Image 1 (cartoon, rainbow, N blue to C red):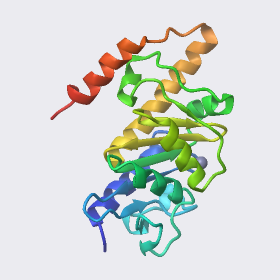
Image 2: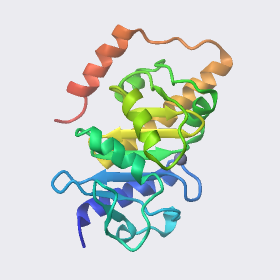
Image 3: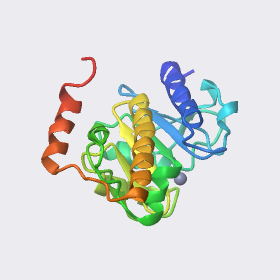
Length: 214
Ligand SMILES: [Zn+2]
């Protein structure tokens, strides 16, 4: 079987979505790109998370052709590929309709940077305009609007996160929902205090160059 290690990683990341209460039933997906071959491993379409195994993962090339797998790839595959084609630094991507982040999608609002944890995601989490699901239009919005952020809220839809690996993009999906939840609850009690641009820049640098194990 092709890319056994990456299949295992992407499978585990997909399981993190229901575990962290980011998805219901079959919605949501994680993909990962192999740095050597450029092939992408992604969740099959409409498959429940509890039935998934690493062998169920679908391997596609950058043009969306299935290279290995008996199942149809996620309906969001074209969106993932559009981003991979234009962001050579991205090797993992996640899509969810996680509840609190999606409330910002419904209101058509970015998630403001009011928590230091936002710096992990590049500061404010930008808003992408409405685009019909399943195609490249979403990918185009992501590329146009995401900037240095690792997550984007797509209007009337949900969230996409990116990372240098599938596990990193998955961590971002968990973080963005936590940030959205706290910000949403705070907004109900008053006016959240936004971090200044220089405060955000300082911490983004810290997360990118100092934080964690090298
Ligand atoms: Zn969706």
